[in-house]
Each structure stands twice: as C-alpha cells, then as structure tokens.
Length: 244
Image (tube, rainbow, N blue to C red):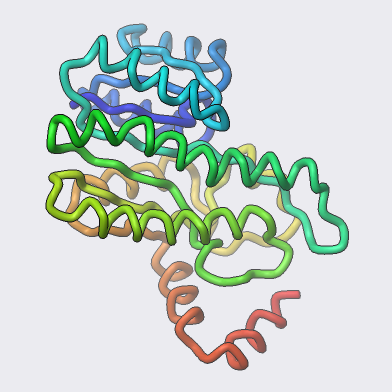
C-alpha cells in the first residue's frame, strides 16, 4: 500500500505513520518541517519518502503530488491530517492567527484534494480521507475558529463523496474527539473521554480499512454530539449554554 500522509510531522499524523509503517505500508510523509519529517523517517527505518511542503500553498501542493507521481506508479490512499489549533473566544480573537487556522485547516484541505484528484481519477481508484473533528458537529462555545473549519470540512467531505460516486475514489471523513497531543495541551478545560494518540490512530486505521464513510470516536462523545445537532435549535442552544 502506498499512502500519502499530510500533516505527518507531529501528533496523530506521526502516530498514523508509525502504525501504518508497522503494517507494511510504504509512506510519503508531508508537513512543513523537513527536519521533523526526516527524524520520523529515520525512526521508521529511513525507507519512506519525505515530501515537505506547506498545505496553504496551492502550487506547492500540486508540485508535491506531481513529484510523488514520478516516484510511485500508484497511490492507494491520501490522508489529510494537517491542522492548526488555538483556543479562542469571540471578542478576543487573534485575527491573524484566525486567518492562519482557516487557511491551513480548510484551505489546505482544498489544495491537497485538488492536487491529488487528477492522479486518483487517472488510475480510477484510491482512498481520500479528510480529518475533521466532532467539534464540527455543533457551534460549541469557545471553540472558534477551529470548530468552524472542521464544520466546513464535514461539508466539503460530503460534497466530495457525492461527486466522486462511481469514480472508484473512496472518500472518507475522520471525526476524532479529544486526543492528547501538543495541540490539545493548550486547553485549560476538562476534555471528556480524552484519548492517547496511539488509541485514536488505531481506531482511525480500523475505520479506514472498514466500509463506513465516517470514522468517529469515542462513541460516548461523538454519538451524543450527533444527537445534539439534530435537536431543535432552542433545545440545543440551552444545552450548549450550560457549557459556558
């Protein structure tokens, strides 16, 4: 299996690389930091492709896909894990940081999808997985702008799934709950059902190897938030206010 992981330098992306490499996959490792990617590749035996680029740069994403196509005859899976996160609330937003989060989290996803799709369409097969979050299910307080980008990712993935029907391209969306990484270390609030990255990634891999469009976990949290979003707004808003 040839798998391209975008956002592989740290956190769940790096753990995903470790577990997939352990299962025998051949990887292309992408993120902005060439140093971090090279260190990871050495941990994995030095036999994988290191392909650093900035997902916010559409030209760089396209060039990365073209470079990889010169080295691989087929691409089995693209997994977009890249994300920025800074907890903020309205009235005190860092607007420069907000723009960076939007540009990377959702803009980067569009850039990577557009870069990879021509190759996937040409071969008529392959998986394209986008990592959203359960934070995208509802308008949770104090979770912006991160949650807004993940809500956009859910919408984007659904559109992509419908458009790719019948093409052989398998579109998936990943919605983790709280995972203990350097990003969630920024949180100063309780994180219900928080998971170590090793356990979260094991669930992601199992889900992507299964048949369900959406991989969401832990179920105690994700199912609750799914039910919450189908409630009438006046009921949902009352529940959300209790989180403030």
